[in-house]
Length: 170
Image (cartoon, rainbow, N blue to C red; front, side, top):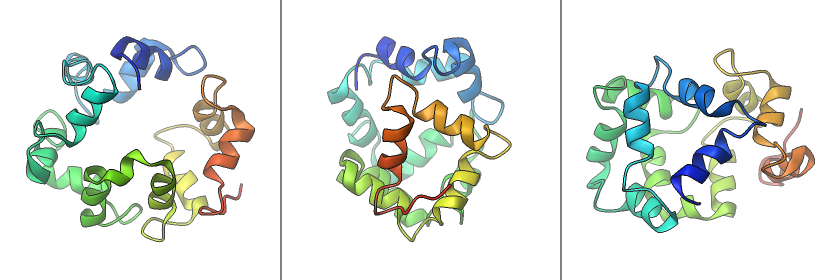
């Protein structure tokens, strides 16, 4: 990755929605307050790839239980709701969810693609509908959003997510 400032600018670049809107989107009522969001993502634990990796998989998490408690803290929606939300039937089982985020596979593109496009999830069409549901944006906007110029371009985006492992169809 890069520094926190660059991280924010990258994800909230003009091609996307602007920093303010970026924060509002991710810290909507379904998540946490803006202040908590900023403190969490901009905390000293991040700042750089090394720190980022250590933050997500290091002792700072102290096992799955602490991981769940951290993301499903009172500022969010409770552990049960957290697990159901991120590991719902539309995604993968709780065990697979935990393994994915805690394993080394999360740092390897090939494994990452296979994981998210594996049979444990859903067909690609459903995947698109899930992430571009009413709570987000339309399919076209979804593609433009994630494939903005700062990333890889729409064509490259489609090829990346539409790799043989996914059999992407629009």
